[in-house]
Image 1 (cartoon, each protein chain N blue to C red):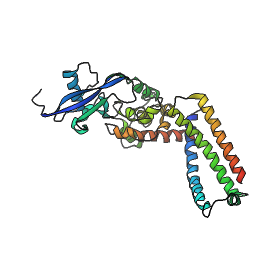
Image 2 (cartoon, chains in turn orange, purple):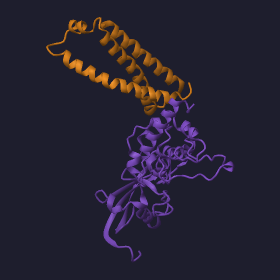
Image 3 (tube, each protein chain N blue to C red):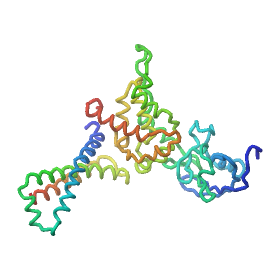
Image 4 (tube, rainbow over the protein chains, first blue to last red):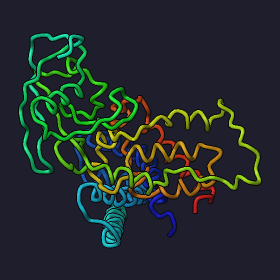
Length: 110
Length: 246
């Protein structure tokens, strides 16, 4: 793809914009959820069959997979001499793993 | 000693880097004088104590940009830095500019620094001038103001030396080259705006900048390369979204 570097930069910024409010929602939910103790039953009661929580955390996972893999690629380029296709491939796989693991977790509670 | 130079009776302890990448700090004692610059004390050492000391300078008055060194760990023009202002416990430590290979002592090899200007396409591209009238450039136009703000770069390498991203990523084009590219994309007489953007909108180009603003903090000419780089980021994304930047 031409100008792949630039589109990765755009994807990184856009995923950050999506993540910012979602992280706040996530943190507030944690604080709310632990009031009076935390049980699996309570969590599942909130999430099971909920389109809202399912799509919210589904979007969270997609944004994390995009943001995390691009970010890690940039960090590796700054902190090591690893470059090129092997790095891009590895980071692609890392992103897909995040997507798979995250989606699996979302599916388990929705 | 010239009568014009006021002796203060005190001594400055200088620790100067000797050698190349491998080397050591050698200690010299130099008489303190009023209004003495770092370049003055280095010159004193070279002329009176140790003629084998290598360093670089030309104009001595802050218009050539060739005397930059690390002074107590910070990149500075030595001709524009008063020794009295940077003394720490009566001592000054001088090293060659960071992020550049050392040739000898305080002289660095600036080849990669200038080659990156070429990689960033930091040179003016003329249009077909024959068929055109002289360009009339409005001094108050937005583009001209942006270009003017960054045009006074002397290529001294202080920003390149101050930049952490350069230290981390050897491919990074650096603040000076990107600042130059920004002045060109804002120059309405330049014939290849997209060519300049294409050269800098790469992994090791403007998008690698972390906006730490070390370049802006240390630029002896008070330029703001961080602002220029932010401009390149915005302009290249906008051009790519419009489909102009292929």
